[in-house]
Amino acid sequence: MDELHEAAIAYYNNGSMEQQNLSWQFFRAMDVNGDGRVSLQEYTDFLRQTAGLAWIHPEMFRELDRNGDGQLDFWEVLTLYYVARTRTINCRTCLRILNGLYFTCVTCFESSCGNTFDLCVKCYMRRTYCHPHRLFLDSYVLLRSRRIHHPSVC
Image (cartoon, rainbow, N blue to C red; front, side):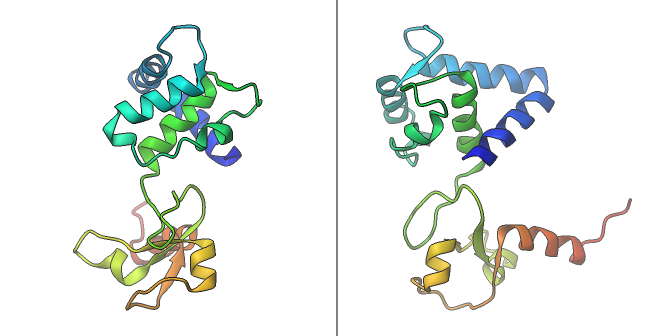
């Protein structure tokens, strides 16, 4: 979660004013009582009321609460905003949200059907999946391999 938190701050700091405003709007929508903090109740109510966030588990609150004070400040909610906008991939076996490193079927990734077959490290390592293809790469290696196939013009 630390790496996601740092990525969220980096995107915020380097983002446009419009992107920063959207982040604050997200925070204010969660902070119903306007005290500058998001309680567990505000968090769970927000997730239930926002259809697009139904995949986020309420347990994630504890992971987001970096200082362990039982409430989320703007920067902690910013991490959730980043996850909600960028991490909508789940493991096809255990359904866990894939926040960090994960494995993707290269055949499915390169096909024109638009669906990928993604697995968390544990499910891939334990081979607890059923899939017809065998070539998987982790998310970082897959990204680097795309550069080899599509050289840039720099």
